[in-house]
Image 1 (cartoon, rainbow, N blue to C red):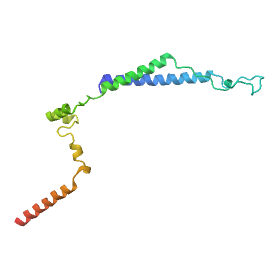
Image 2: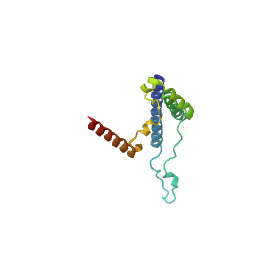
Image 3: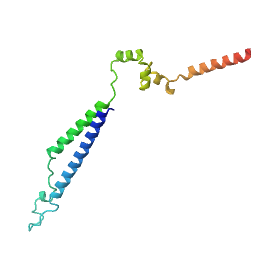
Image 4: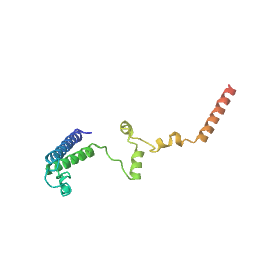
Length: 151
């Protein structure tokens, strides 16, 4: 990641944390400002409207908190995109051409594979042909026995 992408991610994260804190403070101030209990009156409970016992309706977030949240998300997205590695080609012929050209030692240093792109899959134990390996081993044993008998 470059310095630019790291700084954009840090700034975006800081703004997002501040926006979340501001939203929390706004909601807690709204709850504190609302009446916690219905007003005491001389009317019986059966006549008292239900809306007085329901919690007060919350108001929408202020525009500055909403804009800060959107700006922080955009900065985080931009920082992540700028910090990502170069995309690999999608088309098979382009990708195969790059592999055949074999980007040399530079590709090996970066951890990219050179040569057969399916070598990792073909060398896995689940894809090993056990019978062929047995045959190879049996031939090797016969060769070793033949060498020992000649000596």
